[in-house]
Length: 122
Image (tube, rainbow, N blue to C red):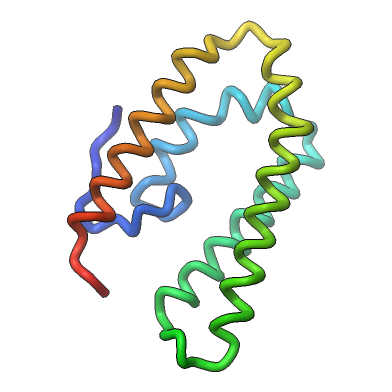
């Protein structure tokens, strides 16, 4: 897969990993989402990215820290449920090589997890 940036946050939506993540998932999303769903997903991802940055730039003792973590979790839960109930059934009906796509996603996840374990603390 693509180059792994040692300065990455491990977030598949940050600037360092965005291209790799999009390469792996763009076909599936294109086949499964209407334009409305794509627009909603883009807004949700931008909101999640912003919350992640705010959380990483703060500490648990900061005002609103717990609220930001909770809202981020709710965004992620909503996105996962939507993808499982709407996107996955549509993707299964396509001609995509789902096994290969799954292997690519698993490999990229492993790379990101390795980065996160070796990244210096902020």
